Length: 140
Image 1 (cartoon, one colour):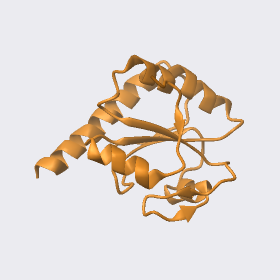
Image 2: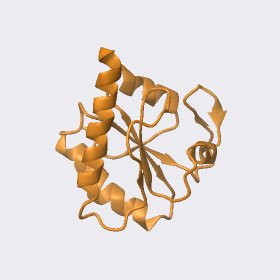
Image 3: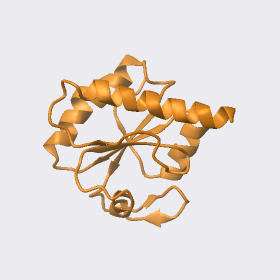
Image 4: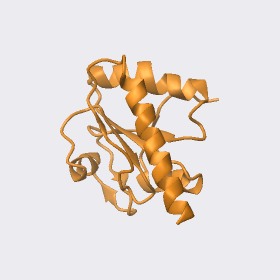
């Protein structure tokens, strides 16, 4: 079983996979030399993956905004990773968005990280909110 955070290169594929499972895509925007990104990955996201408790709740991916390789965006176009970062009007890494298969936000975004003490709680709340939004859309 793989417990490392997967770095995405294809948001269309990842979002369709999440959509087919009726779960949100948790997308963490990250950079190479970002100590807060490493902290969030090591203390929150990787433990979430290892626990197995989130497998049916959220698809977790990391997008490196300083990568030199273009990625596939939600509409299937090749773009620079920073373009996706800019589209969401983000300004700091790490930032976490919970997205549907069109790339629309489903819950409150998590911007930056000061302390991990309450981060997991707020992230869980956002995941619940995203799941509720998805299930509401499916039943209507």
